[in-house]
Length: 393
Image: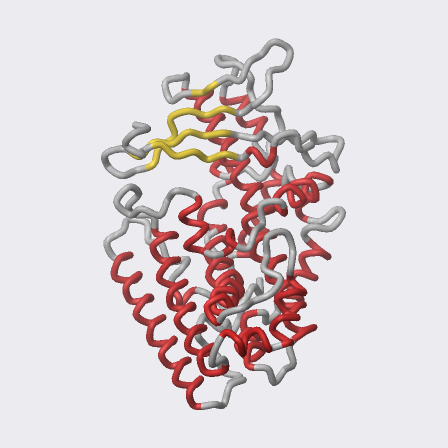
């Protein structure tokens, strides 16, 4: 199986040693740095084959590996723990940090360093629309003290800052480049891993955005020298610098990639990780936002009563459902990718580039719609007609 490349790993090591949310002393909460081994079978379905919930040996109890051959309650609870780990990493790292917060960084840098008449300001402004406002609202209602994270998630309280701090160490510029990220995770080969629609649709959208950005950049920058001489662009990039992010840009190609990252993160990447939340998280046992009992360390000690006492209670589940329902809604009068009614650009070459961009997005949308007709569970989260321009919810 290893030689055939059919084994995959879902590893939530980032949660190791993180103290779970303790804001409500009456209801203890727990986290686990789960580790799940997955196997691609002959039907090209990914199934779990082994789960480990602990990485440390304590009090003589080893790192128990749960298997499908174990009794049904042991295996059921082990899978719930993996999904709880996944939910918390998804919300704090994949969603909050890597779309909302990083898009705000780009937005503030753009507003500080680019004049409103600058062509790159005009290119980016639709893709930072409402981002600072929605993040401010999140700070006031979701990730604040006694906010929704504290009420419903095991990564609430001090755990939130700890997980984000750890995740920042892996938030590199290249990890935001979609093709690079897919390759780094070892899921880029369609023959090895077919039916991975996030990858397939994401690549089509990335290429459409990159092509559009390239067309715009070529209109205003005749060479790499003109990029280097643009003090506002260099100041914008330097303002964002952190860890392995560029501190300057020297070529048109580098500028194209950088701007593609900004637009793709705020539009497609956010859509991919946000708008399916109610679809996949509404059934609480499938993605528990927290757990009320510690993860089992031995087999044969779990029954249905223990599982029900481990899952979130009614109040926590209500907060969880309310949040994911609200987050999965589109705005009234939503502007989707490629829709630019404010017409910041008036130059004819750019207007033609926008028209071409729109046509490519329509082609991608039609390709995805045609594919979805053959699927029992359609994947539409990266269909351009369902991708808002910016992080606005």
